[in-house]
Image (cartoon, rainbow, N blue to C red; front, side, top):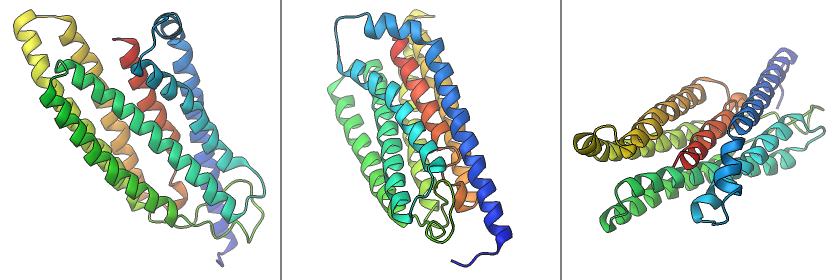
Length: 260
């Protein structure tokens, strides 16, 4: 790929901006972990009984560090070939995808619990979850395969400089996530209404409103911003908010478990 020096300089500046966002997002995650550490010690490590929910919590909590560090490594490691960059991006996309899926499992389990784990809701949520995850995984695989790093073997740079790829696919993935979260939020409304009508300010109603609707608003904003940026920025900004999105999803899903 033959690019003018001015274009290469701009691409490198964009790459540095992405690094700043990753580091800032990691700092945000460390801060979030510190301010909720007392609850984690009490409800996760202080309890002798383990469950699927606790295992999901530990995965989400600590794999987010791995995800963030991988994204920073992609931006900072020296003398990476195009093949090395592809492998690293496969890993980062894999970790991000897995992390988001696990957080969605936590959100889905909350809806299942609020609906009192009925057989009908179990079938509906299972089918809907599979119907959302399978296309997302296929699109994520196609997206990872399409990424190109044409300058890696031409000039000596630190990190991986993405030059091309079917980036619009990322917006499709975030759209699937947004649609899934919207349905989960809507499923919380009938139990919330019934709880208010029968018991006023019941514990269920408080949890549904705080951890459901309010958290959904946060997720909606983060996901929508990701979609807009992906559709309007150049390919080298592909991973600009990847770590930030993972941090937001992980923080809210962990808080849901800690607040149960």
